Image (cartoon, rainbow, N blue to C red):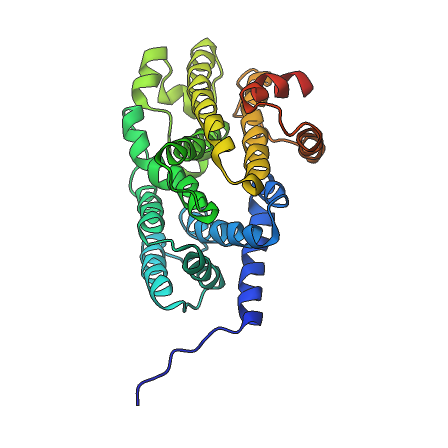
Length: 307
């Protein structure tokens, strides 16, 4: 007789979503804080999305001893497809993700694009041009913004374009904050080589953590590029459903503040990892609560004046 596919009990799914929430709380402090302002159902779905992307990110960046990340990522890809087709998986994050994908009608295209980018991290450590880098960031970050739009029920091309840019802006912020960590722990350089050459900053300088006028000019250029992406993203936030606007705007403001802190540290991203404090998160959430109509376009200037 054919085996009957088991149906997950609501209690089991609740535990799976809780596992995703814990991952978000542990690894994505700013993102997690922002999720607190989503309505409960949407918050659970965002946690499921975070769980889906965090699990392979850890496989690639911090593989456990004895784990072959190439094989583990290939297995995760196959498990993702199986979970999306059947709702079944041995992994709690995939059971929650598959349930969320069914609810919002998400196809496999975006999740697989994300996993393609994770696979790139296992084989590619240098990028010649910014356009080359965009081939990676499309899957690693921009599709996360597009998957968020699936959760919000947003399909307009203009809104999707701005969501793409928000994902890119946040990824670039990560890159510029983590230059030293990415190089020394993982052997990766996300600074495009043509940009390094333009400003006269070499890989040998990066290896030594040298912060000179060349590096400051290079990083100022890259920070301006990220801020352009945030400015584009700002245009899309008012197009989101009202329950999504505040948490997305909050994440945008808090994450872009990392760029301010890099500048305040005189561009030294090698000696310490800059971050927003818990007090800053709470203060910004309160500001947005009491002035919700304030335009996003002034957030960068506002953030710098309030640090």
